[in-house]
Image (tube, rainbow, N blue to C red; front, side, top):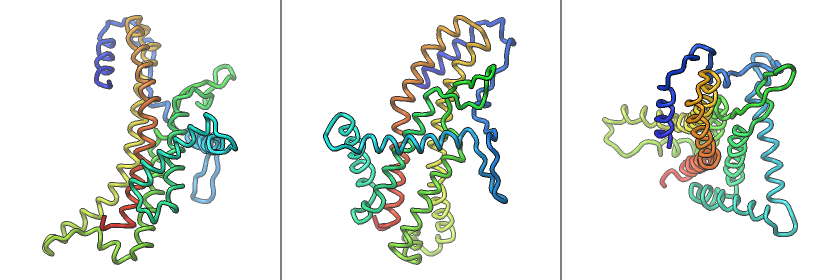
Length: 281
């Protein structure tokens, strides 16, 4: 689908547009972080930015959604949805990645992680007046995903990274755990293998953060580019091609990408923690 959308974009851009220079458009500016409320504690910069606002909103919505879906005395439609979400988190995420002895301890983490990332991703496709810009005093509405910021996805990945090695050391002891990183190879190869294995552990951190960040950033950039070029080029043929393409890609992101990325992040977190607890597996 992305290849088809890219072809449509190229065809639309090939249409002559005499208004090519009528405006400037840079979709990357939508992802710039400007300080809304400065907060500094010594060397720590805890200022409120657009990403922080979306994370706070995402946290509140996640808590409310969890209470709404899971609380209730009688079985109804919303509880059925809640049970479905719970079953996916338990059977497809926790039980697939965590050993039985660790499910009770780490299921709440991976389940909350999956739901939180899903909510934050979904909020990124709902127009909200949180752009930080105003038009004649009225807040401008727009779409933005906090997970399209590498600092956000890296912070989430760091949680899993720290928990993984903490559990590995807690269950196996530091010597046995770190020895489990090294495969059985001739001793002459150890100077080469050990740095590669250590690098591999840090590559997990990068793969978790960059995968989520890149997918959400690319989706928003493409949607903003489709819509923005209509106003910049003021071309009717471009609008005819761009609006359906942007709509199709928007639906693709909301229906498929949002859920898949939340599921993958939580599933990989469970696998990493589980492999540290039982490194022989």
